[in-house]
Length: 342
Image (cartoon, rainbow, N blue to C red; front, side):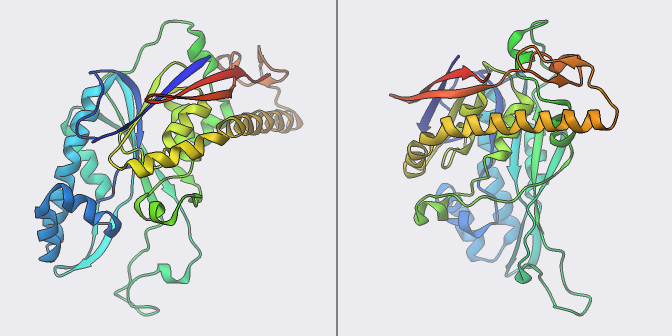
């Protein structure tokens, strides 16, 4: 199996893609009203800088989302009918001249994307707990002026129209199956996953809000099948591209900053080992689950076709994992050869 991974320096508001050309979007945009992205937003609309200088948080918030809205319009254009869009975003808290407040980015993005015709589906709360004593805000140990700390972000999920229909019995769909016990964990509306520190230059880290590989890898595995194309219009250091590689999907990534995209060249070197490690972890975890199931007197009802273990449902029988065998640089990204994991 081969996959292609195109990487472009460009603008999410003007994607180099035809209509209806991707089956899945997984992305994490700049978060409005988080200071690390102020300069980026102000460079795209100087009125944002003026609003921040004036201490007008509500106006700055609305203008930042106006900038993102053009990207959401492009996303809706390129997403195929039945395709899924997953947007990771956090809300913001901030004090300006108009006082301290929370800025609900997840709600505003939901309003904008549904305004472009996408259907909002149940979303996921990604909880990233911290033990820092400095995380609490407000008046210390006495009421009433402290605030709950934000330890979660949102993974918003949208679909373009009705459910997608694949050809009956399609190998690529059933080989892309996840295990029954994975379904029960992944499709929960609460994920507790730690953040990930990336081994990239400090200057680049200041400009990147990348999520850990586990997040896009899960989403790619949940909402796409082998042969699909995954888009990240805010690619950053390329975590979504790496997730698509190790999951055996095609991908397209776009980012304005060529220095961030260059970091991906260094990260793909371990794509083969990451893909094999993830496949081994999932296969070993399933074998352990089968043993626990049997110890409880519950025998899984089916045998896997490609592996020496049982599975719980008929839909899992043809599950098959593919690992990265080789990665070759191309003029616009990478070509990847995958081999089946036995």
